[in-house]
Amino acid sequence: MGGQSSTHSHMKIFKIRTMQGDRKYGIGCRNLKELLEKGCDKFQLPLKSTRVCLYEDGTEVSDEYLWKLPDNTELVLLTAQQTWDGFVTDIDRLLNAFYTRQTDVTEAARKLLSDEQAPQRRKILVDFIQNLNENILAENRNDDMPWFEGLEPRYKNKSNYMRNSCESRIRSYMKEVQGTAASVDPAVRDEYTKLIETMCNELRAVKYNGCYFDRTEEKTGRLCTAEGWFSCQGPFDMDNCSSKHSINPYSNKESRILFSTWNLDHRIEKKRTILPCLIEALMESNGRDINWKYFFNLLFTTENLKLVHIACHKKTSHNLTCDDCMIYRTRKPAKKIKK
Image (cartoon, rainbow, N blue to C red; front, side, top):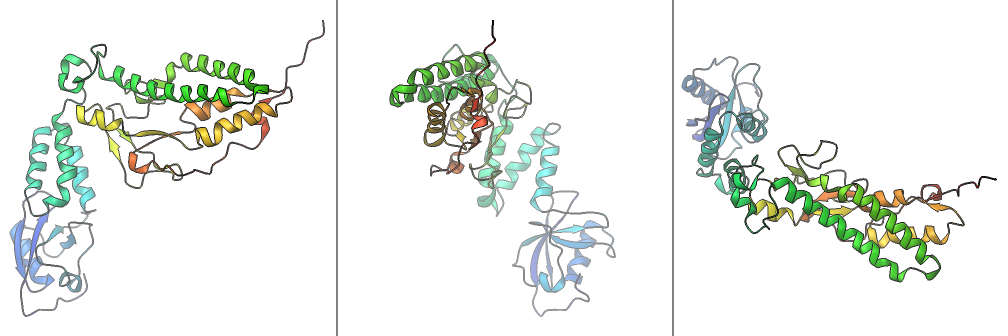
């Protein structure tokens, strides 16, 4: 911990705590040695094996570093074998207590809102308390009437509404695809129309992929957890969301409405790239059948769709192309059987 402590002429004040509880004490000291002595005496800890870490990020504190910290910095006293990863440790403890001590967790979150760091914590904790107090796991209308406020009576449970919400988005994509027919070259317009009808039939068969938003679906079919939590998958040009956006539209009416601003974004763009590529394939097919399933997956499935928070939805040109190899876009014509 930086060797022997040096003594300074004036005293600094720090707030100390341990891993075992949330109680904090103000300690005045002139060096790290004095801080440890007073802290170990207060919490009845062994002086020889105790060390000091920043509460915020777990950085171990030396005597030199201690004196650079501002007054009232929060510190954690750790004994042998104990580790502290900063806020992550507190969050982990909070979540582990979620199901067994929900009332206590809510009360602890409220207390955190009242201290001097409240402005930095307020947004995340208010959302957390709100979700704790909502009936997230309730499914039926009668079990969570506020959630259904403003929705048509035909929606009897949350998953049914969420499934329909996803279906509506996919249907809108199909309408755009169908609307393109008028601008297709007359030479291949009939073929385009027949191919789109084939896709329509496939969409009906898979129920417009409404399973993506339905938490009661199998894990492989949905984009959320079994409790209904969705995570942003990040912008089209990134593997994940750097901001860690998440939401549970099953929790309350406000979250349900807010989720409508999230996008099912096409990585390879629908109008700029996929449809022109499809029309080009039709024009150059030379007797080959179009591999409609290839284009179907790009237009209507998570093979090309990413669920993104509105802040991660980049509206600039993606500059991504369909596969250039024609073998993926067309198939050889079937051989005629001689009679």
